[in-house]
Image (tube, rainbow, N blue to C red):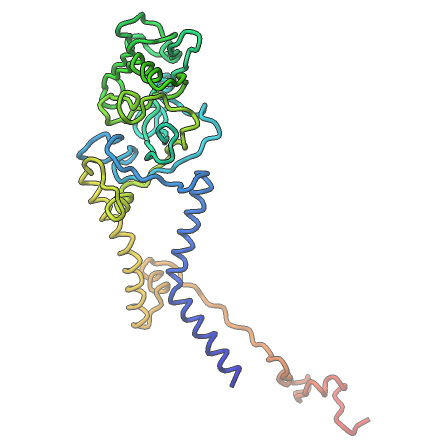
Length: 342
């Protein structure tokens, strides 16, 4: 009775596992994806949801390969921020990410953990000239002279204190004005020694650099950067914004919503359709794999016949001798003699 109860319990467990097989496989796949993302990213969480329109290349249409509201991008930690390629540095060799020159970085303004991370493109590096009190921007010597000028000062990228004007920047070919004198006055007002860092710019911010707005008036220091943006999972971040917030800052392209709903429909609908089809075929007495092979014109699998085995504790069946008489195993061991014979 006890053995029967155990076997029945095992049988029930096996049935439950089989019925949940699809769910178990899905959970395992999701866990493997998450672990892979963490290992590649080197950060937690490895994905960043885009909350605003500042990187969009259109407010009415989203594109694969650009950063739009509701997209998710991978945050890739860097061993050293010297790996960051700025927009101006990338003009020479054409290096691009997300539809434009240079790398997109994720940083916290002023290095504050209470600040919402900003994901914008690194435009240029500026190095504080401690002896002159201004900033050096060496990359200006490597780009066409027609792309930059200085308002209110000599056209020299050493110890700059006036307004730098860049033209033809980004996908929308905007003009960027970086008033270095204002930045220096801010440092003076808070009694802070100026420092080197990056100038950052949202692709869709009409040429207004973060350092000329209320986002982050200082250059972005290397230790404020959490990492670079790498890859994207389009549209799915909208679920997070709609359910838990915050409300998207700016318009969400209509095709992002449409593509999200279509993707969800396929992800949910295809497995359900496969399960329902399998159930229907099994009720008709057809094995799904066999039926599919026949429809595709593939050769059916031939099951190998099971070999006969002798149960433990039982004697094998008698075999006939050459003379046609059968002998038991005990007789064969004793040389064919019966009990009582010598």
